[in-house]
Length: 247
Image: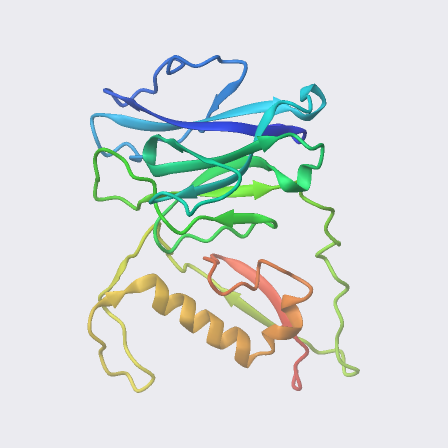
């Protein structure tokens, strides 16, 4: 998807093998395949998301473009109609007004109920795609970009230290985050008592959030947006958090 493309339609195609269909009966110059099997290679068949794109400068006022995407049951009534697509997808289209902030410019796929899209202006849809088979893998979910990504300020803010020349660093290493929900079998509490088995990543993320909050993460979140979102998996990451009172 180029920086000037606009989404005009979506489609999910099922292949009887693990290999994607050649073109799914779609026009290759217009339709582009997201190169991730929606079953993550766990079945003998595979499923693929195709996105129809048009270049902004080639669109005319009468051309239809996608302005909304949702997954699940039929949308509520709207003056602008919704159209059903495979996979439980619904697309809302309208004539191109020339305003790119009102249209969908990119679509991607993430996996798992705990997935998070840290990219600015992207919206991860809550409901997963509805596919013919349901393998034991994290469910695929659409994430949608409206408009063009605006310029972002440089995230590399100047490091500020105390008058005594000291500062504090927090490093999270080998977090072993997984796609979907892992199982934590050896957790202990602050007193060393064993805890029952539970979902691993929520415990890890909660702990990281508490540490960052305790160490002044609010000061860093303004300088490093996204990195400090405690819903994100952070592995082998070095962060300057706040000046320290001691050397």
